[in-house]
Length: 298
Image 1 (cartoon, helix red, strand yellow):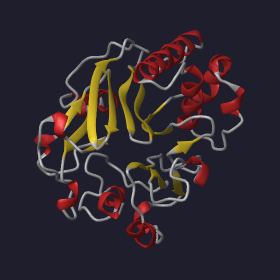
Image 2 (image 1 turned 60 degrees about the vertical axis):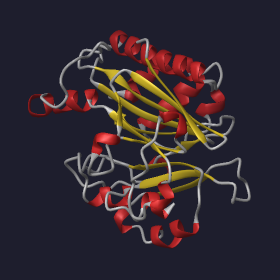
Image 3 (image 1 turned 180 degrees about the vertical axis):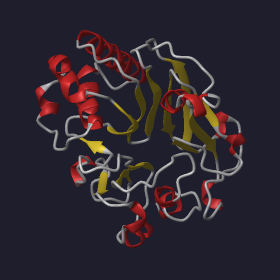
């Protein structure tokens, strides 16, 4: 795991100190969830959270070199620089509940989520609400999404995300709380990654369009909403020390996949983009990676 989180120049921990595409240092915490056949409970994610800047975490260099994983979800928490931010283990991604195979992390925000609960709690199942421990919008979105899922197939999850945005937009309109909502989500279970890039614009509109690069100067929040997410497929990852490089190959020959909020190599040309309004489903089947990208019906 150190080859993913610690060693590369653009590793997740290094990004918390020197972010490439974010204006601020990431000081509010970090965490990961990992599955491995080497663990005593290989069917359960090994979870680690720490509510401090990842680059200050003295545990990282001690723990990560001893760990292997076949599936990993890691996240650095971005938050405002103010006393209203609650720094606690319970607010660090990824989030994991019982009675579901999925853990979740996201880059984004659901504005006014505490007030929106007046309309959204009706969709939430008690078995998930009872497991909430923190004070973040992401954990509430996790409750809401799990409650809307009819199953765990790729189609079920796609439909669950479509329902999620629909009920959020309806609640915003009913309470007159329409606001730009960026939801860039990774939903992960053993040997599976579901990546979602969607949300709604300033007026609660879901058919948002525009050139995200040109919008950088005139409307940064809208630019960040429309910005793609990134996917790298390849093989022989283990042959490239201190790097995220892989050997390029046809998609049906890939043995590894990295889904990320930005390309992690200097030459980003080999990274595929997951555009705004798209969902990608990845699965490791016997050492080979399957990939499906589709448009969300929102």
